[in-house]
Length: 345
Image 1 (cartoon, rainbow, N blue to C red):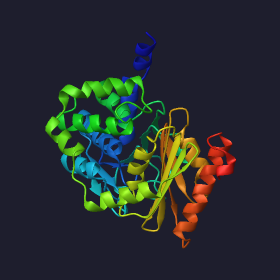
Image 2: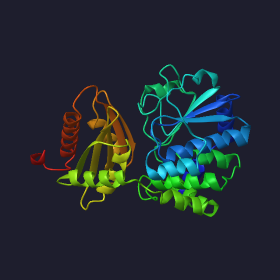
Image 3: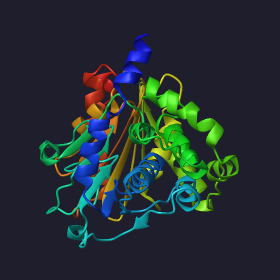
Image 4: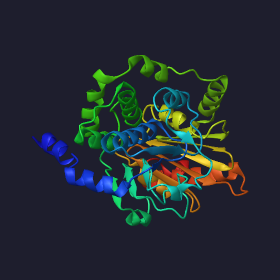
């Protein structure tokens, strides 16, 4: 009964739908996500664009900045969410009736929203990033949900839209990657939607995405990351130095946190004058809280449950020196939490 009540309370009401439609205006709508988007972000944006187009005939432009470099993510972009456009600048933002942010927030520092622009819509599952969220007309932030695309699916469900095979596969893969197959930071809502998508999948495309080929550089970097890994009690740290793509730290952290008796894994490396961090933890440590304690004053970070990430501009500083400072701060934070003996710092 408790589970049924929780799922029912998460549903979207007709009044909420009407307010969302009014907030969007007549279109076109600009949908943005975080830089270097992951499968959850890609699926969430496509789902939101589908909602506005099919429910209210409001067109959208989906835009992201940065790179989609991970092999599986590139395959997803090409096969499941080709509507997304990579952009360098968003100087044309005033021409849209509204701006919607998915899987990111204003003031979070991980998106390319122009400083002069205030989004009208924010849908996310991360902790509130800054007071700038108070300026947004429509906010739906649900930190108990494992994937942002699940929040948007509730809107599709409320207007009676069943995803086609391509969108269903994108939703399924977005949930799968953000919750690691429902094993981390998940909720009854994630579980319900995940299994609802199963009979709707394009299984051939899902296999192509999951088994996307990787270049030789991937294996070289992975070996380098494993060789660079250091174990401090029940904490693992790996500094990759310069990386061929900014999201590689996330893949390495996913692997290293599986080392037996590990409570947290921090991986970092630099790309295009920025230091990138990825943090993974076990279920009783909130990665988002931890990384905000570690990040430098000029950096940006955020996270959800057992997953977090951040970046710090180098600003002329030696990458190695910056990495050492971040690692030191991380080990001090973990020592204060009882994560490792202070003698190991």
